[in-house]
Image 1 (cartoon, helix red, strand yellow):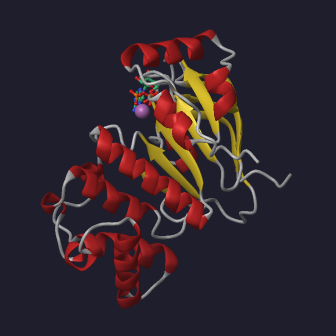
Image 2 (cartoon, rainbow, N blue to C red):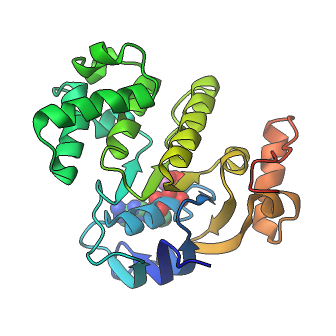
Length: 265
Ligand SMILES: Nc1ncnc2c1ncn2[C@@H]1O[C@H](COP(=O)(O)OP(=O)(O)OP(=O)(O)O)[C@@H](O)[C@H]1O
Ligand code: NI
């Protein structure tokens, strides 16, 4: 087995010195190119883990343990080595900067491209995220796009510097079901084309099962279960995972039949 892309060792995070830890004793490896879903209820620590990996925690947070990157001679940087897509695409885009320039800026800053090359790359990325009329979108501003289109732009910007890891934190949660399915399909296609690893943070266990090779279940700042998506869905080991599955079945009658896309031969 090759070395994992990221090894997380005994990671604990507290936002306040005297407060209860938001993450405690997390051990987790992320393999290059794998799709890993992090699921759990609100407040279970999913975003804290995502931010810790991306180096985006507030400076006041107390962090113990280690996050080790293989094959990196320097500290990985957000934007370049790690792409991050947040739930609120609008908030991650600059309202007064043209879309093309925002995507190009990432490529320029991290890949050292000229503006002309970066703009070409931006246009190519807008095509890759399947925005209609990418030439027009290049010169458009965020308010001229729908929520789903803005999220596509945010994804284009996140992958502009060809990161090895794409983190999507509830990236589809604010979208309606149809758009959500389209964005999930797009993320799946992009990570497979570029060989990126994916950390997909979601409270939706069905969505996670659809997309991920492995699922990690978080509860109260701890990782209570980690396994292949099929194993976690079909034979959950932890009572909390069973509860999440039962809650899903209660809300939605469609049976969760695991797809055959989880790497079976
Ligand atoms: N900036 C912060 N300052 C203080 N406490 C925080 C901060 N961010 C998160 N927390 C606390 O840390 C815990 C874990 O929060 P986190 O956002 O990681 O959970 P989550 O699983 O992502 O939840 P959600 O599904 O609602 O996004 C919660 O108790 C939360 O209140
Ligand atoms: Ni969160």
